[in-house]
Image 1: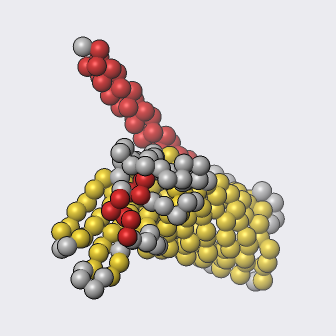
Image 2: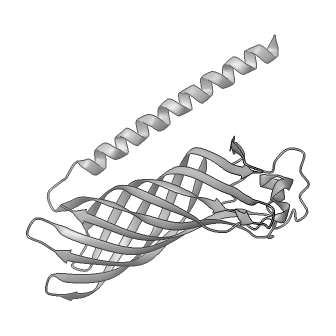
Length: 240
């Protein structure tokens, strides 16, 4: 009886938290879409070379022992979203963003007897808060550097495999719901009469251990088996 009651209580708490997260997303989206006087809003999107890093070099405790003979490399991902920019001074601006992004890694390999597909795909809603400093301006062109923190909310995580011609999708429930880290990079802009064309080279890396240990696995390096995400992106955008 107590177990059933606890189950119902946990279900209600999860549903309440989920509703709160959805409401928060709509509030943030509404804030970014409203354009006050002197602010710039716009869209951004691009491709990313993304990966996951293990501080110990071992992924068996988070992906299972099947990863033992494979090497986790980079996955081609993407991101797309909107931003709002506020001028703080002639050269300095702050820029909150919200974007949908694919992160993960690729452990696929080619053997003499078989080609193995092994992809880790994690879909996030990311919330970077960027501070940009404009270091160069000439005519309609400008360039600057930027950095700031980001938070990420997991929407879905799975591994996609093709082994011995058997396709399989498995949910990665041990990927944590929240992640956070830092972004930094270089940006350029070209001013038009109706807005600005933007180009960015951006890098980001997680500061949090993003995956829990799988039940039944052994942590060979308990003091240093943290898993963190990273990515390198080429992004284009347009500001209104």
